[in-house]
Image (cartoon, rainbow, N blue to C red; front, side, top):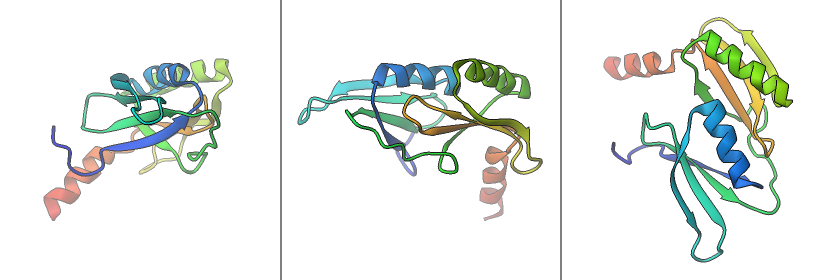
Length: 141
């Protein structure tokens, strides 16, 4: 994998372990790097789904002001509507389901918004065809 193009997004978090668990559960991401920042001593982790060279960088802070809230969000594609429904049921039980699931038709697909432990928004989706759209655009270029 090459480090070219969009490689990461960094999010401040209040409890790094709680955020690791959230993104492992709802985005199938795992820790691929962790350290204490040399200058500040602040815990930092990188999470990846292992599919592409992209990570979410979690930086523990005492105070977090959510920057990704409802319309500004991270999007994760699910393998099926059933998987999305199951994750939404789990999120609803935890009180973190913000909206959905709902089917908005093509090209938006079936989607839901969840709230991470710090108030950032994660969108789960099925049927958006982002990969296909990108591939077709590249082939036509």
